[in-house]
Image (cartoon, rainbow, N blue to C red; front, side, top):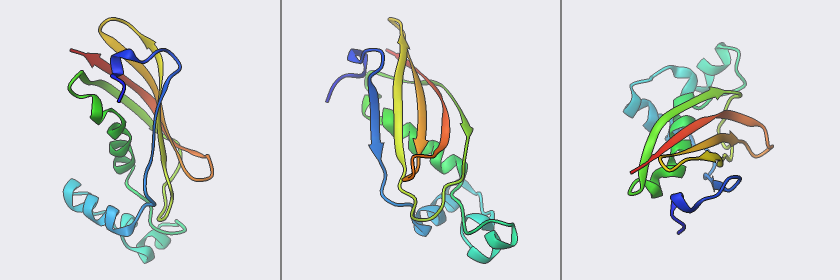
Length: 132
């Protein structure tokens, strides 16, 4: 595995998740304390005007940060800002990516995004990774 400090501008960290399952969202509800039924109960999501249950935005954001987990011996996420750009549904296959935009001796700045299986962005934002 390449060290994160060796990345050059334009290089991309990328991963694809398994399809989103109801159990993923039930587990996240329990761990986060977010029991809004639009995330776990089909009928409640439909009553809210949705075509079905949707993933928690923070579940998607948390998964995006997994791109940096292999590099925590080299540094840490100092700043993380995102915008939710679309909904994530059951069985969606999400691709996580982080493109290195700029770097200094102390920081790596990434443009991050999550896209679904149709190539639609559902999350986009920025990560500032501080090097030790």
